[in-house]
Length: 440
Ligand code: ADP
Ligand code: ASP
Ligand code: MG
Image: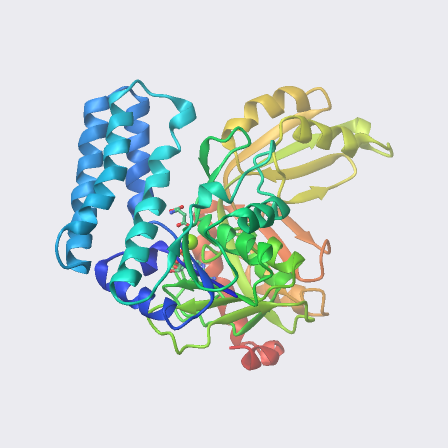
């Protein structure tokens, strides 16, 4: 059995849904994971924010606009208005909620609507065009634990117990949405449908997880900022995980892990060019050359300096205890004899962290930074030197090399991100990267 995940960009209009449905129907036994139509989650989150400000009328007005746009797509896709009887029920439930005072515990029901409506329409369209399929409710399958993390073993149990599911047939479900440990509707983080896909792929030990999107695979640099990027035909799980984690938006940062732990390959495919080979992500293979570059925004540096660190043991443990107490993940770490620098994403966490970190030493903060990550066999002699050649004009604030053999991370001012990505791009034409040709 396969997983096929269609992102919002592949479901963004009636025409795109037709194309995606044609791809889905060529598979006999599969679970199709649908994101919301592109733009819908953003619009629904605006509704939720407006509801939160107690402007119930404006929230209802914005919801009506979403409904009008969505109905337009449905009319394009189906003959007659019967489909609207089904979608209307979901919109009505949301509008009833928006008439009531804001309730934080029910907030996620608003963004969840995007995936619920899109998967419903997708499944009904498959059915209307002759492909028998069953709609599964992801909120009955994906449950977060007390740390707000999904548990693949629990997902496997829930799927097996689900009376609508069997290992044969075409199933359609929602990405991104789930329930929290108290049973309330919740969502994964943004872009989380990829994560749903790999969690389900792990749960059913799928033969393959296909991520269908609007580009022909993982590219060697960020195509939103750099021209002339090329798709990479094969990546190892570690390389893909690093790229996803450090900003390659095409994959959700957490989605590689469930696939890797269960040895299920992931294939990234282009919905609009289904013959393009795309990118296959599978078991570890040694990197050859510099494989790809990615960058992540909204990074803050905290630098803790203390004479007590010199020649002492246990100092770093104390520093990281504070991050653990505040449940703030750390991305990049560098140390010197008397200071330690770490990067974090969440700007709202800074004040509380600094209050505690000040007990260990002085703390400097640098905001508006980005992480630039270079993936490949970076420990090969000469590779670091050639990367630095390309970056010599940039104001590098931190460098981390050697923690793994397949990546280097740099921290730079955010306003240098685009020019640094472009400055590094010629590295793919460099003579030391001959091996790249075999992947491109
Ligand atoms: P979906 O709606 O299918 O989930 P996303 O917008 O989340 O699509 O991801 C696809 C987009 O990711 C591409 O259109 C591209 O602009 C962006 N992207 C960023 N980095 C990369 C990369 N390294 N390779 C390919 N695409 C990338
Ligand atoms: N619809 C959700 C989002 O926009 C999830 C996804 O697209 O993967 O974040
Ligand atoms: Mg996405």
